[in-house]
Image 1 (tube, rainbow, N blue to C red):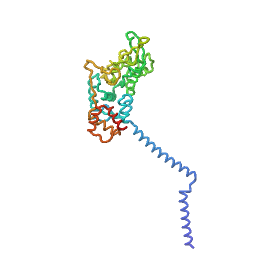
Image 2 (image 1 turned 90 degrees about the vertical axis):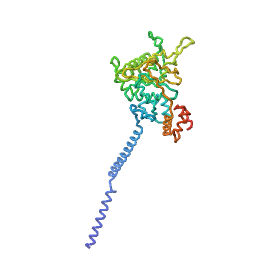
Image 3 (image 1 turned 90 degrees about the horizontal axis):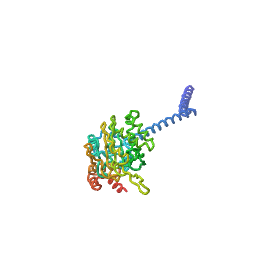
Image 4 (image 1 turned 60 degrees about the vertical axis):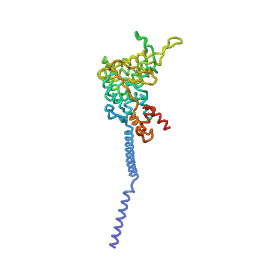
Length: 383
């Protein structure tokens, strides 16, 4: 009997132990279950949130623009592709750059040997005139110079389409004293003021005081953009005068399609009931001012690039017997540069694999070293 009692006690203890262990996992109140579920949901949410954060961080890192320090470009960068971010240069300003980025889908520009040579020329000469055959890359070289000067801390007034200052603008007779035969161009003046107030220039403009010391140049520019047609042209001319004599900041004027400032405009003056006469740029006040605004104080520079397309005067006119004016010719792409270009196009999937020096030589002979024609040929092949 004693053994039976001990056996019963042992079985009872095993049953109680089993019940206790079961209650510990399954026999929970509904409140306990809901709390645990909420805890699990919080953990899941935290995990998914952290995953989302990590994913968003990855996306931000992928979307983050790679900024090139253009001040450090030198001979070692020749024939390499340089990344240009949207914050450094508006991609819709230069037609050639816009076409390049649209074709490749990547924001990269080839740094050429002539770009490196131009850097040295600008360091020595106050006025530089860029020339070259159509499609040689003059506009891109000028844009690369703009990026470099801004990286060095210069205030750069960049006009990639100077032809817009003598076309597409409203116009009205100035009519004051000796200048009564001159014309104001309000819309063109606003184009110029927007170029002065470009985002990379804002900080410097905010530090520059006007001659009377009452306002900053940034305030003058912004007030000019708010003025009516009667006063905005004069405001733009006043801003030019302030920039030219600026001694605290290095000022660089960089004008593409510069020869448009010397040709006929698209404006006409009514001379009679059945007669009207073209208004030449010689009679446009702002165009006249921009022809001769050489910011020589504090190492300023005036860089003019002619366009060989049909804008204004087709002949290069920015010439002077002054020894400070330096004519610099931008050459067409050579075989080595054509090879670097095609290798880049190969990487972005715009031409077939297997680019070599012989193929580059054939492309050079076929297109005469013109990038636009290379792109058109590749687009025709892909089509």
